[in-house]
Length: 328
Image (cartoon, rainbow, N blue to C red; front, side, top):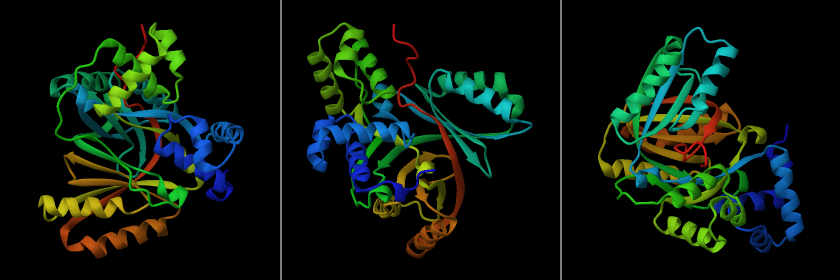
């Protein structure tokens, strides 16, 4: 199995550029890394073939399209391997399911659902319960208000503070069908060539290019990234749920700024539910996790009522635009 030691400086430099903007041309990456275009082409293909890069995707802020983000945590009962596969397959193909994450310890599964309102969410969740609810021992729902995405600095030995945020207070943006189709393509492959999209949508490549530019300016698209299999690199992903003793906005802001500076932190999530703030951290050992949590307590111990740690076993589905299942 590859580890971080098997990624040389050239691989790390290329991954770093892709994490900044996975849609940029290989020729641009070549200039930034001072490598030839042929070397960049070869190394990206090798990273994909080795499944270190699983895919490329657009980060789409669905709140701009009028969607809310609901998340369901589920504990299984009486679920064997085959039944788990059946449940995962069902969720993958269910309308509006954006993320499906396998967990360990307290809960087995987290499912993220995009819905326009609580009634639409209930209809979707009822479908899940009707089909597989007898295998759920327990479940609870949270509403995500904002997600902060950070660079995978722990891989690149960088301190890049680039932050891509979805959610929060925002205004709805009106898009036509062509815009929606472009979003669908880019959510499935952020590196989809302009010509391919133009041919499938029967519009000029320059039109596609301009529309992507407009979607970025409106912050409907907030970035393009590679999905990196960090387990292949020897890392374990943990999710930490924090309950604050002091919910003063200044305290929350201080904590977010602190987490942003930690190169092992990849996401910070704000949600309504059982925690006040959540973050995900990539570490190579449980001792490294303890070191991170010890430092957190040292800086914020009096402000944190308690926290809970969950192991993220696998991201089964990551899709920022699941609404359109098939291009017509």
